[in-house]
Image (cartoon, rainbow, N blue to C red):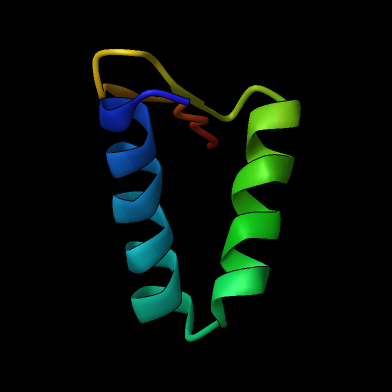
Length: 56
């Protein structure tokens, strides 16, 4: 994992810890699950891609 990708991942993890009030292990698990189903993506340039789902 490159430096920028890791930095983006840590930033998202910190937001999950703060907003959801979960611990680091749970935040890591959530990120892994979101990546597996394609809801979030990190690239080598440090960009974070999010799939936005809209409902009615």
